[in-house]
Length: 113
Image (cartoon, rainbow, N blue to C red; front, side):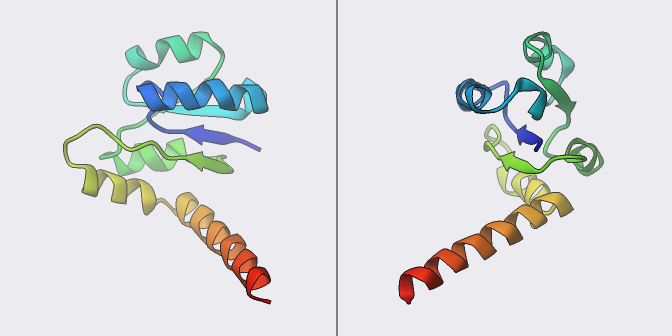
């Protein structure tokens, strides 16, 4: 199973990576970064680096190739609504959301019975 952590070069993303790499092999973790320069320490640590900006739909689509699970970390202030929409509208993310909703609804139905 391949995980993608967005915002991996920021504070929250770096913190989350510390926990995730204790749970799964680094080879199963991809990280999203805006530039090679920012991603260099993560690449040196052995992470699969994917380069994309939230505003670049083509790069996002390529970055999500082969990803099974997502930790979506919010972007920096700017045009957040449009950029987050770009991430959430990726076909792979829509698959994740569908799976999440199915699991959530099953749990709620079990609780109601």
